[in-house]
Length: 353
Image 1 (cartoon, rainbow, N blue to C red):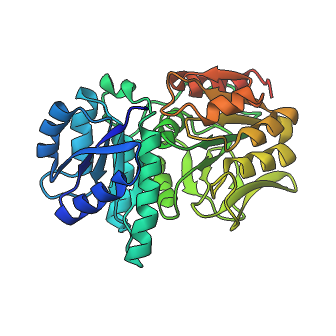
Image 2 (tube, rainbow, N blue to C red):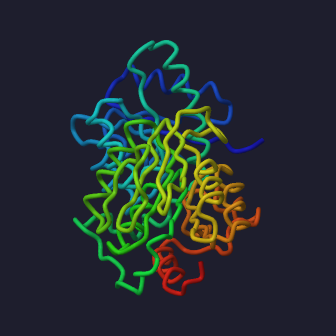
């Protein structure tokens, strides 16, 4: 019989702890081994119970989830799924939590509680199973301090790459991976388009956060936004983002639509559009994430002449999307996260696209 996933539930509300415990126990592969009302109690229970995964409330009175993660992950790295409210403050703290090491998050329902709870618990069970496979070992030695601006790469000969497009796709673990890459890009980089699996509202805050850290301008994309040097466009949650050509330049089109590979925005949708309209002028990058979204689109990009990279297994939180992209033939090579930004700049300066 397969080993059950041992979960510790951390929430300051006794009612929420009860609801989560009962809801998670509906899955025979999950065992709730304990609950904690605050991070101080959780700290002792982590040592004694040795859970495989934590669920962690974002906003708590004695110590919020972000502070707890910043103290926990370097000492005792564990996969953590945040349980977030949909308030504006909750969104900001949730993104802070992802920066601090959380694998993923679910949102607490704010309307139609009965139906919303059922959907939230179903999502939480699925994300706990995913989190149990996540690689968080790199946090053991990480100094989880984000400087106001990370050091950018030395400026290379990128003056003639103004018509190039860098297309990046990511899911679980992607917010941290994207930050590490984009923060190293000089302001002279060609335009970047990114699809990160994330709900509506969070993508704007994610873009604003990146914009504070990066030499490039970062914004949540809107239809008609031009892809140009020095700019990063993040696909908005709840909309598919496509790259199109308009005369002598590229721009994005954001459209509502059904989920593709379970996601909206979808990496596949973006990368297929890049293959069609940008072709050999593109570089594709597939980062950490669960599933196969983007693999077919990346293969189409390669067939159109693009040079593509995928994150390697050792540095991926979840080696799903990059693995499938590579095995399907879309990615030319697997690259460690710490080397990804340099490799992209090298490809541009070598004029291999």
